[in-house]
Image 1 (cartoon, helix red, strand yellow):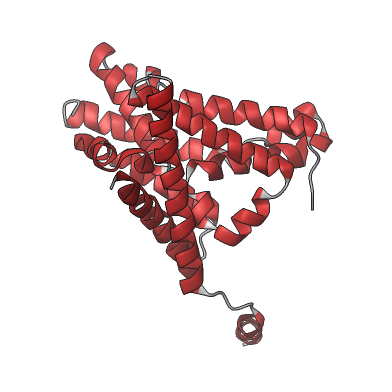
Image 2 (cartoon, each protein chain N blue to C red; image 1 turned 30 degrees about the horizontal axis):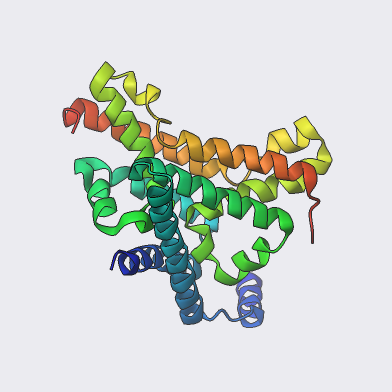
Length: 116
Length: 147
């Protein structure tokens, strides 16, 4: 059942993105930024954590989870050390994703040539 | 008047996009990516004996690795053109935009090309993610009392 939830959740997020993309003049860059901001706002009252608990891995795949993890890490650290924790904990959970994306992009760019 | 005429001509000659078909394709592809994420999560928790939050990190790194590799091999661009938001909205789109920028600007040199342009497409996600998380963090810390 958790696979069905994952399929539906991730599919519906992508569907919303595609509908926005087709019916407005926004580019994919606008849409990913929009979804990151939505994800960051959904961390309030632990809404996104409840979604992840209910849906499972499917909720961690869309880019909304990136925004959620940024705010989540910032707020967890802010609870411990005060206001400056917002800046200290910002990358606590997302560091692995950003780091590996940069690293793999660099390594692959050394070995592969662009194709048109 | 001429501008309006021009816009009308452009509208007539624009290739018609099948909105319903596009939406259904991104729904299915996005859903499949979600299921792959869930399957990887369960495989990692089962075989590596780690907590599900650690397995989530492994899962994301795996998806990013696969998207980067397929972009470098050259066929991920075709998949993205076909599935559109089905592959752009998941974390694969982030890795794809970064790797394609890196490969494209690599020939302009390591610092002025690769270094300066690697975040050309993916930078917007990081920028607005951090700015919005900071603003929401300040609001929640000072006004809502750290909820």
